[in-house]
Amino acid sequence: MRIVLHREIPEDQTLRDRWDELVEQMERPEVFYTYEWALAASCAYRDSITPLLVLGYEGAALAGVIALATDKAQKRAFFLAGATADYCDFVSSPELLSEFVNAVFAELRKLNLRMIVFANLPADSATSDALGRAASDHGYSSFRRPGYECERIEFASPQQRALVKQSVQRKQLRYNLKAMVKIAPVAVSHSRSWDDVANTLPGFVKAHIARFLATGRISNLVRPERRVFLSELARLCSRRGWIVHSRLMIGERPAAWNYGFQFAGSWFWYQPTFQSDLKQYSPGFCLLSKIVEEACDTPGMNLVDLGLGSENYKERLATGTRQTVHITATTSRMVWAKEVVRYHLAGVIKSMPRLENAIRSTLNQVSLLRKRFHNGGPVGLLRSSWRWCRKALFGQSEMFFFEWREGISSVVSPDSDSLSIEPLDLNLLAIAAMNYFDDPETLTYLLRAAKQLISVELQGFALLRSDGVPVHFCWATRFEGFRVKELNHILEAPSLDSVLLFDCWTPPSVRGRRYGSMAISYVAARLRDSGKTPWIFSAAANTPFTRGAEKSAFTLRFSLTRKRRMFLGKVVQSKSLINAPTPVDVSSAA
Image (cartoon, rainbow, N blue to C red; front, side, top):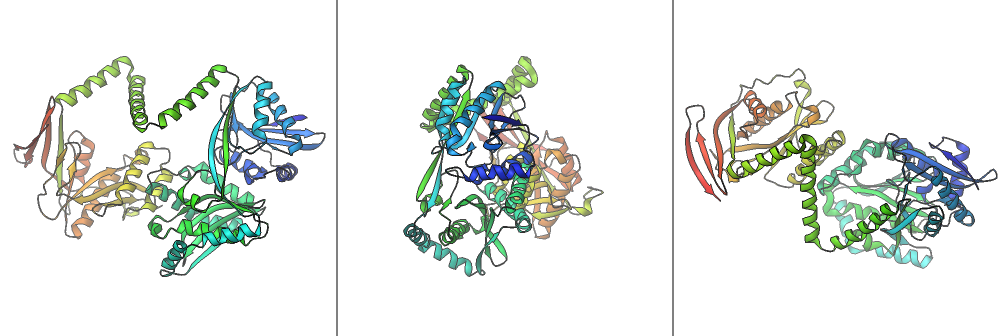
């Protein structure tokens, strides 16, 4: 077999046609193996990976395709679609598969690729066995481990169709649909043309990111390359009639989405989401149930594939599963041994949750020490450790408390007219996540903010630019009973109408523009209009914040200081800082 290599996915109509024809000849064809999928992945991730397209020819006929990619060092290869596809495989007719796999490994050995990772390879594919033999023949040691369980709803026969359709029309589904109908008429729509998908995709993206934030996770859609991938994939697949972007509508409002595909008799549940504020109606499950019903009524459709990962709602409908495997092939016996030991050791650790938590905590501490060592060397590490010990045993923490004085703000900004304060919600957090996707500190803040949105006692606010992007966040709550973590102290309110601004955050990339000062001033004015007395606090050592608070019409009223002596501590209040404060011991604690 003749092998041809490409370092890109050529935009070649003839190659596309022959490639996709070869996919159709496979025992289990999938949309993930197509030319369109490889081209979309190549376009979206070109800045981080280099494609390695291996084509096998028998005479002039295309006989095999494998779309790989390599890292920047050109020593490691992996499936080009590995980060985006639920299944990955070698594309070849069954009778030529073993020969093609062997030829590919011979070529990879010539390229001196030391490690090849084959993730999400279907366990029922003949490729998994061919890989082991070919790897060994060309000096690679391979290690195979289980990957994911993929739930599936199969209905190849008329009897299965009837049973599956009956199973999804359950009482809970009817109850949820009736509850939604009381709001507005409910309907399911499918977008298949590029123009229609392009119009519905932005809403899906924002809802997906918001939903993940609400569950304490960061969606992969915060990254621009992932959004580019979905957009490019939809554009390419719409030409072939494969893309199906489904929505469950309550009146004119989308309640749930599925970015999916119809390909070779399979309807794929690829990337779904739903509106978090409609969770009580289970709109995502309702949409899936309607898709299953429609698939059962569609001639030639034999299954609904629910994709990677086992989840409760999938298990309720699934009639079978498909296993994937993860195969690593390496030229180093040492690396192979490490892979084997790491996998089995991880399995043992995961079976003991306490041990797993202890190891994670230890690794975090080691990571912190390494970072300190990297930044300051041995001397810097010793100095930071000494400062931590001194602070823990004999440290002192002082917090300043400021009251807002209406009408004297000195905050001036040339673009203040283009800024606005809005109540914080999941949609604004989603917009922020997309704009600050490469800022770990801000993403951590956004996760905390999403969790705080649940509390009825907290009010979140965002300062928005004219383009709708949040540039500052802050929160307000009752002063009385608020716990200051830095002091381990619960506050007593100066008055019944006192409210406290806290947890303020400006993303690092937009600092230095007085957004924080403007935001707290605007929020304070809004709270005062509602009959509240706004307060704010800050660490005394945070000079920029205290100056910003004073420029925002806040006046320093008192401070609280926690003094530590070995393992004992007490909080001292300094009243009326403007007029010769008199320290008052307000508490003592171990």
